[in-house]
Image (cartoon, rainbow, N blue to C red; front, side, top):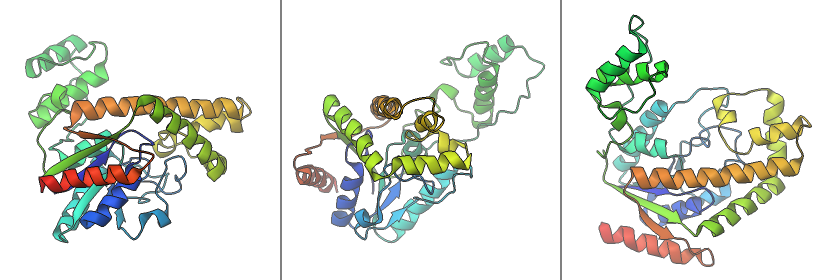
Length: 292
């Protein structure tokens, strides 16, 4: 059995995962694309060593920010960790908010997705028509040649429809999806307050170190909380403006996370009791054990 703890940012996934791991003899696997990297700690809300409470944690801090790391790389690494943990007769508990990582690791998700333009003698219209023959549900603008070529390559290489690429429902593991949620206003307030706490914890210093490194890889530019502060270091925006942008982008990201999870996975949602988080832990634990 594999357990997934998912939900929007700032909803309590980290605490829930540790408590469940202790109760269920589990080990935790990171499914946050930003926590893969070393030195990205505060803005990514990475778990602190003392918060792990002796529970083994995997796929945190495994890459430097200069390195490239793809969803395909994650798929291989995560599946290896799942198998290792299952072989130890323990329960893998995946925790994080990167939906595509969860999908890639647990579902029959294919990655043979070359962008080799072997159709250089064909017009966009001809490529589009070929694609329509293979995938009648395709929804790509005829002028977007690069995406048309990618989609046609995908269909030909995998004998699958590109439009269903991210919608495979075939799970590779016996999986329980636990979603943590709360009222939208409460969530947004927690997101806003967490940004303020990050500043007290040293976010400015962490972001300035990254800014000064001149490294602008995907690892640096993807997380919310670093790039938004760069204009402050360049004296182009005030600190207040940059912090408000972090909060705004975090709220938008939370909204996108809800949409992804609801559309892609069969999630059982639990409203978090922030006044007494143990109530939510007990509720989730009782639900999981009732299914075993």
